[in-house]
Structure formats: structure tokens, C-alpha cells
Image (cartoon, rainbow, N blue to C red; front, side):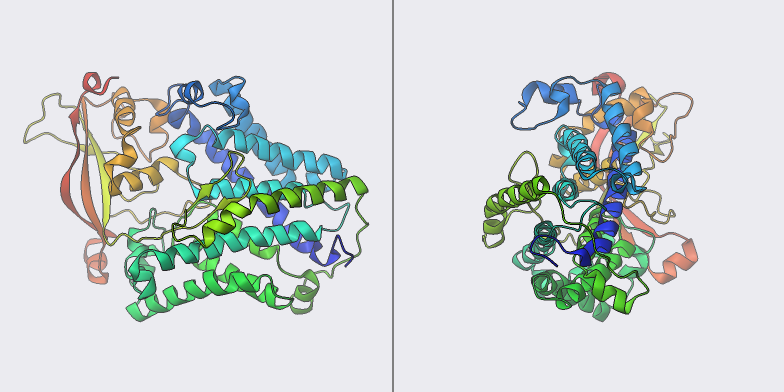
Length: 478
């Protein structure tokens, strides 16, 4: 290893960059398939209205120059095609400067989407993808060995993701400190997966071990990332195992997969080749001077911007999933500082009866990912992100989360809006829209082993209160 690059990490870089391109592909695919209903010209929170009140300096995006649904779709699908090409090796088949431009275009296109996405894109993994994606611009390609400075910056991102999440837990809900949070979390998490029921039914001592292991993974292993090899590689491997456990137990979009890729970037390829049947590192040419200058300048920029997230880590008022710049360059991360003990789900229903009475038949709108039909086993969607389903979970915690978009959602259902209905699992009114739509809140809990065997239901639910009164199209403002 010379002072600037290390061929020992060529395989780690290869896996990281190809995997990152796949994450980009999923992100652009989700954007292209969901934007019309959520933020399109007739969406629940239209981009043109957002651009009219938010200046470029606060939310930089290509769409400040011009917006149309067709242009947004073009950006999403061009981004997806470019990501697929990079995942297939296109960035390693072109000169270094061209490879950097490809990664930069991916970042610019997704930044433009996130910065007009409003509440639908207010998740930590959006900023994590952008921050990590910009680092990939400076990581090089097959023409040169990976620069050591960027490899350390990737570890700095991983440290903030894990250590920030660990600190927010220890500073937050008491159940993290007494090791009881996982008594509830598998059941009350935003979007349970197909194995979440089984994880929830593990013995409580196992849940306590899970919680303790989480603290080790988030508060101890991140520090070891900065230790000499092979300690750093072992720590990274421990994080990968922890993240795979989270992948199996729930749906957290691409957060876990991106964290796994960051951890793999810290694995020394020479050491890994001694343990696993992997190719040994081979010598790569020295990078050009212009590239070294760009990498060093970018590193200085990141170090300067790191002041705010570093201060946030030691602050008693730690922020969670916060971007300090509109470019999402160096961010604060964290998740689940508090855990809900019970699950409240909003169930939306419609009826063809314009004057509801005791005999009125109400039909439920079934969502793709969030719980609804109690007999429907939770599905696996991650790394794909169902944005409406996630916001429905937040709305179940507090109506304030739905203040800006729930009435438009009801209005679109009353219109039978095709783009909105595509976000759902099925349309209970295929011939014509309903006359009325309402929403009610239920308490959901996982069934017991006996209840599952006798009823076939994964959930048991109890009506709590009315969330939205029966409303016609005229009342909803359609």
C-alpha cells in the first residue's frame, strides 16, 4: 500500500460499488412507479406547489428549472437504466473520468428527486444513499487502486449510522437500557415482514439477548472500525451479521443493505482471501495527479462538514436522521429512539351506499405492505420502499403526520384515481368509485400460536376510534 491507494481493497470496492448501483436501481424504480400519485402534478403533495414556495438554495433540484410528470419519469427511468449499467460493470469499462461522471449523474438525479419529495422522502436512508453515493464518485474504478482517504470516509459514514443509532437508543426509551424493547418492536415496527410474527414469539430471554447484541453492534463494533486489521474487518463482519438479522425480521427499505455494503468496504481483501475462496488482491496502477487532487479536496470538504454531525453525536439533544446541508453531504443518523408498545393501524373503507345505515356494507382498501386483512401474512418488500404504507404507520401514531396528505388521499379514492389505486394491493370498487370513504383506527396485535392454528389469522384487531368520518367526493373537495 502506498500513501494514497491500497490494492488490498479492490474486491471490497468492487462489491461495494456494484451493490450500491443495485440500491440506486431500486430507489429509482420506486420513484418512477410511485411519484405520480404522491408528488406528481395531480399527486397528494404536488411538486409544482412545493417548487413555488421553496427556493433552489433550500432544496437544490434540477426540477427548479422545469417540472412536468414526463420529465420526472424520464429522470427516474434514466437513473434506473444508468444504475443497472453500472451494476453490470459499465463504470469499470470506461476511463476513470467517465466513471466518475456516471456516479455523479446518479447522485445528481437522485438528489433532484429527494429534494422535491417532501414528507415522502423524509427518511434517513434517502440521505444515506446520497451521502454514500457521492463518496462512490471518488472511489475510482478498475483503472486504479481504491484511495485510502475515501475508504476511511466510508468507515466514518458507517460509524455515524451505527453509533448514532446506538446513542439515540441509550438516550431514549428506557426499554433499551433494561433490554425489554424487543418484547414489542417486532410487532409494532413500521412494516413487519413474513418472519416478524416468529421473531415476536421468541422467548423473552432471547429478546433480551437480541437487545444486548444490538448495543454491542452499535456502540462497540463501530469504534473498532478504526482499529488495525484484522480487528476492523472482524468488526465489519459483526455488523453484517447484525444487519442480516434485521433484514430477516422486518422491512426497512434499503437501510440494512446499504449498511451491509458500507461494512464490506472495510474488509481487507488480502485477509479475506486467506479465509474464504476469494481472489487475492492484484496490483493496480497509480492514479493520475488530477484524481489525487480531487480526492484530497473532497476529503477536506467532508472533514469540515463533519463538525456538525460529530457535535451532534456528543450532544444531549441528539438529532436523528438530519441533514445539515441541502446537498445531504454529511448527515446525522439514528433510528427507534423510542419504541411503541401497541400497534395502531388506520383502515380505510368505502361504500357504494350514499346514505350509510346499520346495514351498509363497507369494503376495506388493502395496502401492499402494511397490515390490513388479519389473515394476510406480512410480506417482504425491502429493499423496495412503499412510501404510502410507511406514512400510514406514522399516521396511526398521530394524525399530525397525515395532516397534509390524508384528505387528498380520500379525495383520490373517491375519484377512483388510477395512479393512487396502483399504490394499493387491490381496488375493492373496480366498476365505479365508492360514494363514501371513511377511516378507522384499530389496535393490532400478533396472534398466539393457538390462535394462528385455529383461525389462520396472523393478527387480531380491535376497533379503537374513528380516524376520518364518512366523506363524499364533494365534501372531500374532489
